[in-house]
Amino acid sequence: MKIYEFTQIFPNEYSCRMHLKAFREKEGIVCKKCSCSKHYWLQSKWQWQCSECRFRTTLRSGTIMESAKLPFYKWYLCMAFMSSTKKGVSALEMQRQLGHKRYRTIWVLMHKIRSGMGKRDDKYTLERSVELDEGYFEITAPSTVRLKRDRCSQSKTNVAVMAESTPLEDIETGEKSSQFRYAKMKVLTSHKAIDINGIAKNNIEKESLIITDKSTS
Ligand SMILES: [Zn+2]
Image (tube, rainbow, N blue to C red; front, side, top):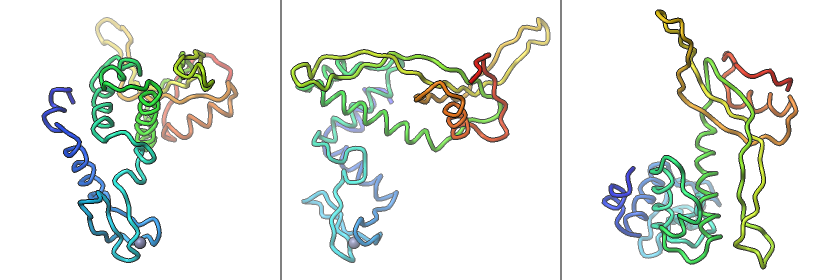
């Protein structure tokens, strides 16, 4: 969704809250205390109340927004920015776009959204012909040391990159190429075969053909 379209559909905090409320009701609210699924909506409190035990469920409860105080509008806007740019947005740029005071809050916000998106992607596995290789990514994380809180530390992380690719061959020229469909990336904890095999098993369908380089692992 483009930012212009986003601002048309979600002009304020209220519209974001109502959207989340409708979405959660469609999924179904289940009481944490008694597992009952029948609830009443308390508009003034922005909470659902269980019809059995009267336990209350907030809009944020059970979502990636739980335990965060940031307005829903900022969450939504951040997600819109993250999904509308092809190149990705830095936390510093996001902080500027959202007009937020603290860098760390925005960094955590983006991290939570990314991990939420990853959880959604975990539901899908790659199939048919899959290319699998290892790659390195530079990672930037705010330092946990108090005085240097907003400064960044850089390091590299090892990542398994898997891409569904169909090998193609031009009948006339004999030129070989491949067509890509979906890709997944998973952080590797080691270079060991057992680690890489585990990731392949969890993310690629059983009958698939895996194409990889000459790595022994
Ligand atoms: Zn209940």
